[in-house]
Image 1 (tube, rainbow, N blue to C red):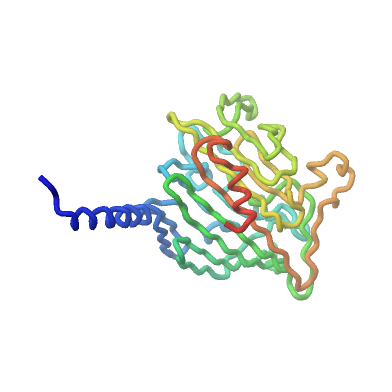
Image 2: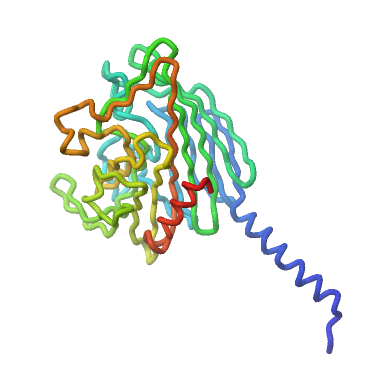
Length: 330
């Protein structure tokens, strides 16, 4: 029996449209504002939350991959999670800050006289072209509430069927009446704290952790050899439940000091740091100001990074090609 030609043609034409609509629905971005956070969902599934109140700096937590696997440590936001270590309580999810701005420490979290805080001044959110956009304004103050810096931050969030992307752009502005000096220290800056299962084999105190993860940079250096080295990108990946999950971070070519240094540790701290020169390079060890960056009074500087949450190792995920896309503005 022959089927009518017109319905067959209609079905053939309609099928790709239905398929594309379902694919688009799977990566739709939804942002929901609460008093202290913006919730980010992609395809109806939680990707992350931008939390801008309740701590000494804004941060993202949790960060969840395309298949629902969490790619950040829970501590200190959740204190008692089996299998987690409780070191460095200032390593909150995914965040940006620095350990020396005008002599104040914005990296650690304490109540001392040299402790800095990053306070939210305003948060806006929108969705355009399948991309979630969070725009934040913050002020960096000392224990005496004196202003040392402001920032305007734009975060763009989107997803594909098997990946998640977070673009972080921050413009740092010195007050009109004084300069802001970013001091040379390894304690910074654009960072994420990964779960313990992603780590390579390493020792924490007296405990030997038999992790199966790998850290690799653009020159092929791996694990401990990536610390303090300059690179356009670094990828941190590991197997879990029969799959491999990775987190790559890209340093934008327009950034000052590109390619940046990396404060990336085998215990799951993963940070790009453009201001750690004397800590990272033995030739400059005697000069603790070798990597200082001064923003003149009223001046500003902009940095950009991309986080790419992917499946597979750096070859499977084509990290070198994805970095080229980022550098090209894609």
